[in-house]
Image 1 (spheres, rainbow, N blue to C red):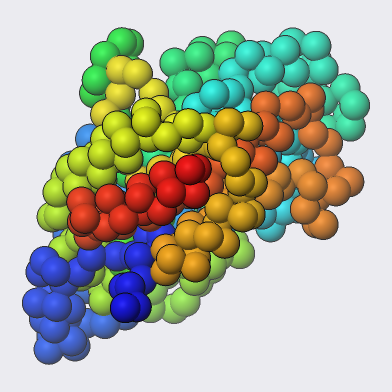
Image 2: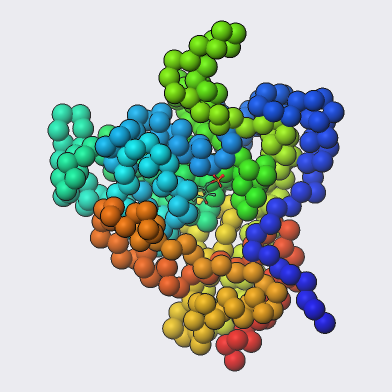
Length: 389
Ligand SMILES: *Cc1c(COP(=O)(O)O)cnc(C)c1O
């Protein structure tokens, strides 16, 4: 008997998606203006408790604009993690600037301790600016990524960033819905803690618009400028006057229609993902050599991706596990290769990277769709348990 395929992460579109998209088409509002865009922005703003938001084409364009808003330009440097998806870093290059790569901590997010040592020892203040002694370039900002929906150590990172007067961009593309439940950031959502946050609604994210993104901030002036820059920097809509180089980065009404329907279901998606996460985690306690990466204490994570950690006690290596799962019609994927080792970044400074290498060799992402059933989770577990007999 052939088994049905269990994908890694696919969208679930069983709410009001068809209804809203149909309405957008019937109303003939399909492009970068229309009522769904405004509603979607408002609903996201309310959900994450920000001051405002600007809908964009995707997470990558959102990060590009965030860097522009902070004045990142040619010859600047931006601190960024090496253990992440490359879209968190490429926009630094779009600005003509360069990343300085940092290690991760146990949460897979940026390691605040190494960040502090780097800033203390490898950089020096000159006037208002912070100079990287090695390159003599100005450090302009820090990009933090909440990997797999797990909050980075924002309490520590914000303290350090504030000490050095460095603005933080939160790549919260994987983390919409994650928030602190305790401590001094209690109630704060991932994406709303730094200066600017960016969400992604790509097809594999926890909620999708097919492709799309959102910039959020508490700084209304920045958001206004974001709207301007993403709309070709058009300062007069009649005479088409442009006061700087802009971009065509706006979200369409069709995308926003999908997004609004998805947002209505986000808390349900998170509940299913939590249930499946707990199920995997419990069953792994009886499989030697397998565990799941924990989410940060004192937060409510969105449980977007499950990082399965393999130790030496497990008899198979990463690539063999992925192959055997695939033989059983189950999709799994290794964690990303480190960015500082990728061809376009091999000449870029990477500061004392160590823990990221551990994770690089030991983490596999296993099926986690918001439509994944308990039975399907049990099927994945059974294959993993049998491989270790
Ligand atoms: C998905 C993702 C992005 C980019 O978002 P897109 O909407 O696909 O452009 C950026 N950073 C990280 C960490 C991501 O996972």
